[in-house]
Picture 1: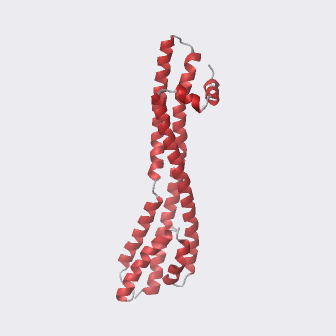
Picture 2: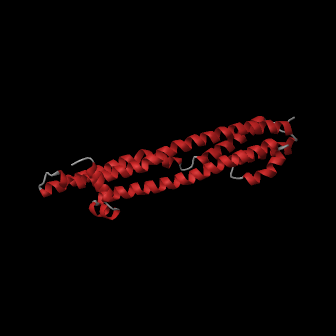
Picture 3: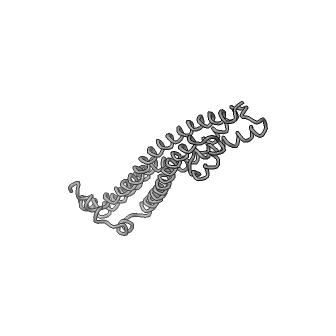
Length: 228
């Protein structure tokens, strides 16, 4: 039997036929892999949209922030850039500035302001990283789940071979081909999850760095506007 024979067999096999030929254990494995894949792609599409929107809003808000004459002007303009993570960091810092200015008329506690800004950065990083662990789990676990399905399928194929009393590859080939489907499905779920986990991780770190830099810019503007 040539290498192309199992591939041709899989291409001709429809989903209904696959389910009918598989045993209950293999069906459970394929169902688990399908759930991982669907959830993984849901996270990927959602995260792609949110990170793209965050980067775009950050750029627009940062331009407005650098053109503004003071924090009050930025506060008024910030509502239209609300999806931006930088706006959340700004809100944390501005609330602390307001508290200090109301009490003493100026920004007197730089350390407290730095802590407030860091809290804003941490909160936004947590929001950006939400559900990323599921991509990591999918990338690391689904190949092994697929391998388990393949092992179970091969065991069933050899059991059927023993019952038929035939040693022909033509007899066992379809069973092994079916068993390998689980490995293929597992890899199909794991590969996109691994790619996008690393891609999104890089973009989130870039946004995190941008927020840290923005916190420094905020401190400078606050001290110029309300410093002693």
